[in-house]
Length: 329
Picture (cartoon, rainbow, N blue to C red):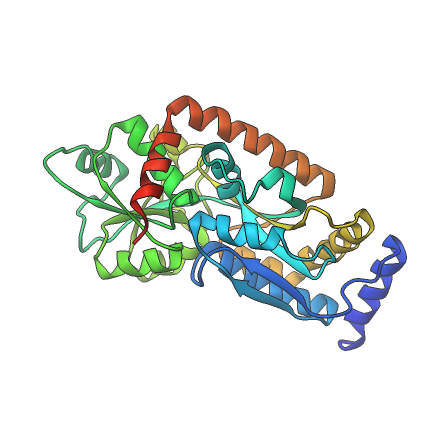
């Protein structure tokens, strides 16, 4: 029965959509290096995908340009359902800030399923920075006589945008160090090359649990179950970070047919119902979002519009262009 189950699922999906999918390995572009939230989610999804369908979901890491390089590559892939992409809120924010003739989130990718909403966490290396609360951190970062180093997952990444927002709204003083993903940035934070970072809960959680990093704040309006003693942005009055959570979703090239998109969606409904995947996500403090098709497409449109209004009103696009010109570490 364990062997037959994926085949049965595949057959049922084919009956409902008129398309049998997948019939061969599927490739998933991950736009950041290993160690970041996208990569960790990609690994969990690949395991559940193979359990559900009997076909592998092969990860292809392609970092650079805050996730835009991987997104552009995925958008140009053959639109046959064999090439997918895991992206998120970093693309919605980047569209509001960067004029890119090579890629456009709305025009070049087809939203399939919203996988997860992931809060970000403001963390410090306790051996480098003595801040023990978010209020102490704000005071430390506002001192003009000191120079602190803020790591990011890359220019235009969610960690960079969140740090830009809090720096702008709280008038803070720190130096950015941009990496090609949160995995490399976290390693330098652990090694003491940078002092602090705003990162996705998924990727920094193991280091918080080990004590090598200290969490001072989670974005959003609620505390998270896996870090019950860490306050959230709303309760601490840090409004700059209240709306700086991230989301992750699955996309395909925009030319993917409706019939194929429906088949992919139906498979991911089964992937999201996988008990082991749900347990794995719960261990990271998140849950399967399960927003599909047109509903997910509408969400992406609205989120892109919201980010455009927020960031352009603050003038953060100028910061982004400056940092992009200076290059990444």
